[in-house]
Amino acid sequence: MKKRFGIFAAVVIAAALTLTGCSSSDSATSESASCAKEDLATVTEGKLTIATGEPAYYPWIIDDAPQTGNGFEGAVAYAVAKQLGFDAADVTWVRTTFDSAVTPGEKNFDFNLQQFSITEERKTAVDFSSPYYTAPQAIVSFKGSKIDGKTTLTELKDAKLGAAVGTTSLDAIENQIGSKPQVFNDNAAGVSALKNKQIDGLVVDLPTAFYLSGVEVPNGIIVGQLPSTGSGDQFGLLLTKGSALTSCVSGAVDAITADGTLAAITDKWLATDAGAPVLKP
Figure 1 (cartoon, rainbow, N blue to C red):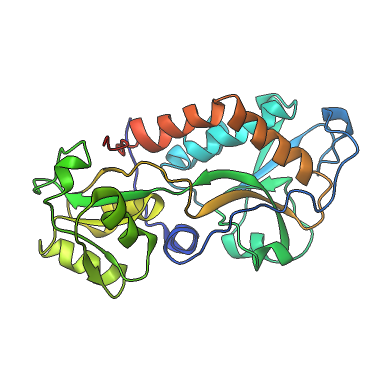
Figure 2: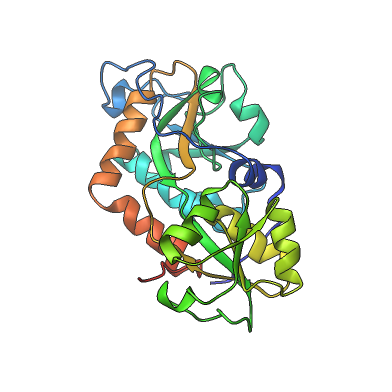
């Protein structure tokens, strides 16, 4: 696959670098009497209108073409649509900015996905589905580094790893890898140290790792993801506040989580094909 790394601008920066996730969704704001396709109050009758960013970037959407279903969020969107009873031909895509999507008011989409972190503040303006993604920690390095090609946590214990102060990334180095981290005031300082080869790797959340390895760090690589601990920044499908679809969309996300569909999509687009394998113990 040809991997395209764009400059992730405000969309991914806002979602991955600075926001704090929460542990619950706003899935019961307004319930539809039925989740049968014919009873769903969609923007266009008989169609499901899904929004994403303009442009949308790898690995969330491949080649800025969400209609192909390629990329993590493209695949999630079609899996949710199928669960709701919509064929691919019944899905219509629209584009929005990140900021306009999270502001109050009626929307021109049924749901929107572009790495929206679920936060209490945002839930006062919009609805969220159950989480479809919880961002794990990952290690960013560069080709030819001491940790390039390492596949286990054990192999990383002697590596010089850094993270920003007060982050879950810092905790991950200490608790999951079992080594003493180098602490930085922020991610920017850590990136500078990595570029200067003062550290072997920088630990950040996975969406940030995609950005840093593709844009900020010369010859950047993602060594791997740390095994999930179940905590982290959570992404949800965004809907109009009080949408009659919220409970049904949440139910669809829950269903693809329970039957393993979401796990398979995650492995394909955010691990195997994305070059971010999960590190073994």
